[in-house]
Image 1 (cartoon, rainbow, N blue to C red):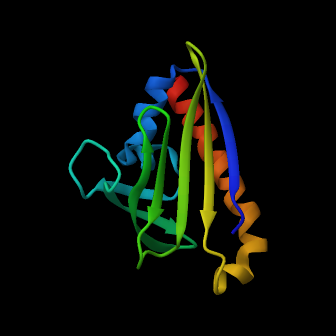
Image 2 (spheres, rainbow, N blue to C red):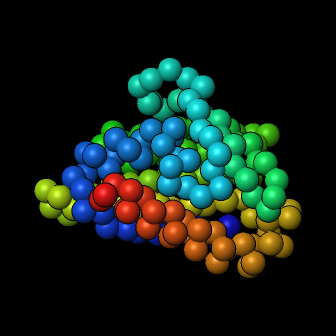
Amino acid sequence: MKPIVVEQEIARPTEIVWEYLENAEHNPEWLSNMRSARWSTEPPVAVGSRYDQLARFLGKDVRTSFEVTALEPGRSITISSLPGSSFPIRITREVEPLGPERTRVRETAEGDSSGFYRVAEPLMRPVVRRNIAQAYRRLKQLLES
């Protein structure tokens, strides 16, 4: 899948936005269909840290394990699904200060376009983009309230 990039400005200091995004256990609070996310490695978050998540997609439970594959503390984190997970995907979340009380968040999602996903990509791409944009609007509401 070609990368999908979504940006959202949040009226909160970058440090607060980063601390929230870095902790995968917050994911069910702002990602719809997400049921749980639990670290399977001990803190602090570092390259090699792993977590497992349970989501609901098309009426089915989808379990995915992720590993932090790149980390620039306070700036960006990249997570990749592990082999054997439901969907091969890599997500990069970046925060950029826009002032003392404003932050731009950018998510880039890239998936494997082989097999079924190559055929389904034209249908999935707009749905994935819409879902990511909705999630970041929820994140904005949550962090600004």
